[in-house]
Length: 395
Ligand SMILES: Cc1cc2nc3c(=O)[nH]c(=O)nc-3n(C[C@H](O)[C@H](O)[C@H](O)COP(=O)(O)OP(=O)(O)OC[C@H]3O[C@@H](n4cnc5c(N)ncnc54)[C@H](O)[C@@H]3O)c2cc1C
Image (cartoon, rainbow, N blue to C red; front, side):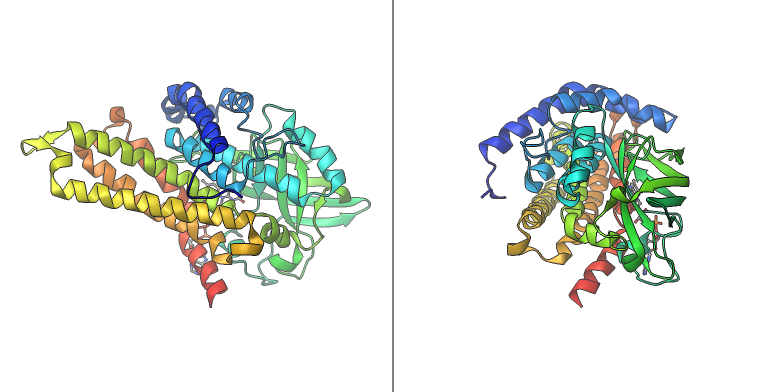
């Protein structure tokens, strides 16, 4: 049994591989990619292909399916490690690692035989999940099961399958993925929890097109896009789980998702903290390095505490997600990202202040961390929404 207090030799070796990949492949290009004006130019296929060569892209696949069977705890470590160098790269991979786990757990054998090779054998295969719509967002996180607030993306039953019309937005890897999980309203007159169905969608399905690629303030090396469906036929064989029970797929197979989001934002906070410590050692004011001033020392010590506590919580949630019968508590599907994004925002803005005016200057490179850190106050559920979700479980 793996432990979240001591890294195994295998985990250490995996993290060493990820560090090398980050240093050699991502670090030299991340700042330049982030600066591109067109959001599509911020994304790099070379990074994805190199992540494939390093075994990162497919690491959550079981050995039988061609991966190394990384568990959720190990995956969270990898996601944090990637985000220390570049948050966007971490998001591209976190979505893919998470959804590859779901391909293995939620699909039936026939679906696995079609989709796992499509993912495994294509070094550019990244994965996406389309749930959010312009008018249905926090609603599905809670979720409200109100018949007046269904998904606007609807499916009509036709011979042998479903005809889909509608659109999703903000979808991570939306314009890059080759396989999608898509949430669609299949039963009119019902709410989300009773009337939505999860489908597998191939990128080249007729009637499915990509709309806008969103121009984001941070996390720019990952792309987010609109998915547009116009009389798009999906066969019955592409329904994941049961018709009308799409949300059960989320409940049963996504327990680690929130903790992975937390691990991403934690990596950004670690990067900011490490930079601030180095800065405080060399920047002299008041006749001595900043690190010798009590106020700065105490601030950095508090940040270190927040990092440790957040990481421990993420690890616990990941371990529990993989041992649901032993330690799982539904709040762990909502809290870790809230904790991590609040801590990260405090740490990153605090570390920027320790950099003084330099923290605001683009050439020092700190401002990217602030823009990146903001992403997860909004993404994977707004924090207030997740607190409401936790409240619903508790009370
Ligand atoms: C970078 C990024 C990546 C994303 N990736 C994906 C993805 O891959 N797939 C996907 O499906 N979606 C994705 N999303 C969508 C994301 O999950 C949603 O943006 C998020 O859930 C919030 O939805 P919204 O923006 O419409 O805000 P809204 O739902 O409109 O919320 C606005 C505000 O109202 C508050 N609020 C809402 N309901 C209540 C209530 N009942 N009581 C009190 N306050 C309330 C919220 O907390 C929030 O502060 C992504 C978003 C971002 C920014």
